[in-house]
Figure 1 (spheres, helix red, strand yellow):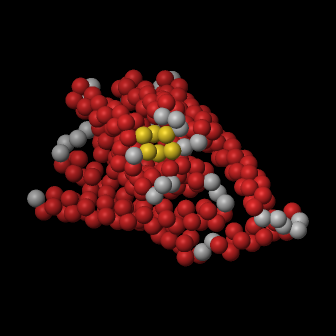
Figure 2 (spheres, helix red, strand yellow; figure 1 turned 90 degrees about the horizontal axis):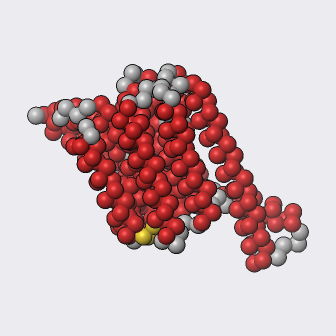
Figure 3 (cartoon, one colour; figure 1 turned 60 degrees about the vertical axis):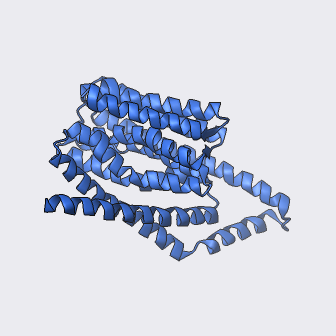
Length: 336
């Protein structure tokens, strides 16, 4: 009884730490990104996505290396389904709308969909081994290279806009002043607060996951289900808080970018890195139901945004939430 009370207490305290840390992380990350001239969407699919995905990556890595491979794969697939259907569903429902640009959706949405299909492709042949691992990691590096190219294009567009507003004596002077301005506007305190916020997210989530797993074990929940739901939702709380907080502050591209970038990172790195060290077995139901459902919700998200005029509105959010509830009911009570 005392253990149960302590675990519930730890769960509540860790949730408070995560929420506050996410707020600090988002506010300061956005300011630093603005100072460096980084677009919101690229900031979302890189720094924010990777930072908030560390709990999933850590959980999948530890679970896989400790032999609990069902948990490892389950954490990744479950997190990706929850990120789209749960997190974006909740965020769009309460924020009212999440906006994006067509080119960003085309790039990041299709990459997220493509990585899911690649995962299913490798799952189809059985255990996910070293060959698949190397391919996934290289693919992620290619994706990062594409993002760097797009950022350079964004910088060029911003430069043209600024040149129309302000006339400089020479192009050299403009570039020099821009760089100096960017460097000067980066506050070391803000950089430190980003690190503190990220650290709080990781520590808070670690406590949250530990208490959640222990409570699940006390309740007698199976390993795969624990990975798909308990750990997946628990480790995705940073994405939930960062995505929700960003959308409520009007940072729509950061909000969507965090989820799409996180899903890509979860598959290519969250499964790719552990598979370097050991083969990741594929559970039949995960192959036949969970992974295909992950693809379904990704396609559903893209369709909802496209039909909404590059916006995920409240109706779309409700559809995504209903989809996740349907998945949970089927997985827990029908197919279990």
